[in-house]
Image (cartoon, rainbow, N blue to C red):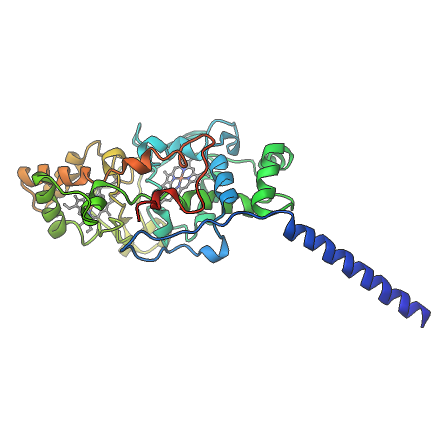
Length: 345
Ligand code: HEC
Ligand code: HEC
């Protein structure tokens, strides 16, 4: 009898203590929620925010991680090395992105508006942003991250420790938290304030070549580069010949189906003026080269005049407010609890 009481008492004391500990966990950090609002007229984002709610602290931490070369094996390559902020978070200075051990086999696409993408990579092999982030870290060509060393680094670095605690609470830092924070920063990268958007909102108007280009775009390009995201995120074969060295079979490399041979995910054309070189392997240096390819391969008939107008239209997709938003660029700027780039709504 006596024994039973003492066990019960012990249990009570233990559960009370456990309650106190979990209460400290709950109340010792209060991340500030950030609301994600789709720009007016846009579809709902594909990302499941309920599994990883955006917070001011989570986004700030994700930004620090995104720009930190300590994520790579030799401390030279950060996510931003290939996803360059001045090029709308794409690789612009060479066709194939460079990692720790030389070259990758593709050109990094822009990261703006990833919140709307159900599948990631040119072949769609990553189905969540968190799974995607592990691919460059595990790839020996890209970051070749030594995961135990990275975890040791963040768990012992006071500044990281503080930021992780503020975002996720005082537990031991793990890869799940790292990838979720990286996602939060990437999800905040929304571009929806180009001249095109202003025209659609009735705040600006196209000059004649832009207007004519828009009309051509509406008939010849929107089936794949569908507004407002300028992609329908399908996989298409646009008759790019296979590079004999890269031997990139596109989506077939992932699905193993010959029907997917040489199909690549339709890239968004937002900020296209800045994301050259173009194509999955960066083979085209200018919009003119891309448009010439559509014409010479016989896929889309285009006159020289139409190519000029289309180029004028594509230039209206440049969003200088997103490209210069301090919340996206390296440094200390923080975002408001309503995302800064939605201020115009
Ligand atoms: C060495 C260059 C390099 C580094 C470093 C790198 N990436 Fe990438 N990234 C690429 C390339 C190339 C692709 C396209 C790969 C493909 O389609 O197979 C890509 C694709 C992506 C995509 C998919 C975009 C889309 O439209 O499908 C996301 C998201 C992304 N990277 C995020 C990150 C994050 C986060 C980091 C840091 C943890 C990172 N990348 C580090 C080169 C890099
Ligand atoms: C059948 C679908 C389809 C149509 C129609 C189409 N595109 Fe594309 N576009 C793609 C795909 C797929 C890619 C990526 C190809 C690759 O990387 O191998 C692409 C790539 C591009 C790129 C390079 C973007 C980058 O970041 O690398 C530009 C620019 C472009 N298209 C413009 C246009 C224009 C302008 C039109 C209309 C004249 C058009 N496209 C019509 C599917 C299409």
